[in-house]
View 1 (spheres, rainbow, N blue to C red):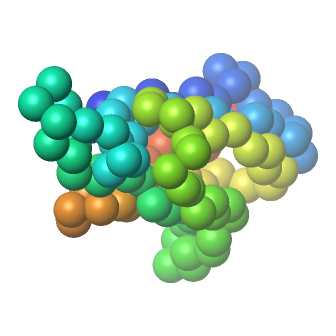
View 2 (tube, rainbow, N blue to C red):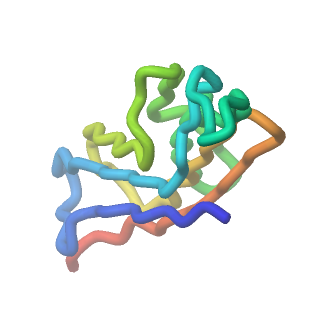
View 3 (cartoon, rainbow, N blue to C red):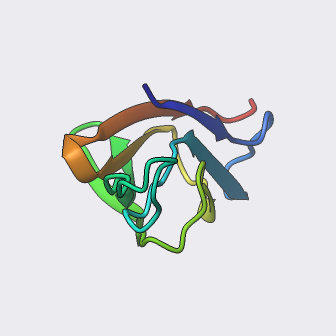
Length: 111
């Protein structure tokens, strides 16, 4: 079971450029390593990460990344967004063996 940690600034003002950090716990097994008995461990990688901005009925891709075997276990992805209006950020990690994990966070501004 995967667990994600998503970090946004505690205080956001309209027009700020904010750094979003998204980390997911995942073993990221390449499929090239062998167990103690010499049997290849099956590949288990996160292949794609996306972040969509949802404003009302509009859903816009804000960031995406294709991940490969050289990515470490528990990959941390950081990117910047300009905060213009209240919205929801929807995060999705997908990978081998039907793996999909989704999280969302609301972005609200200081008064």
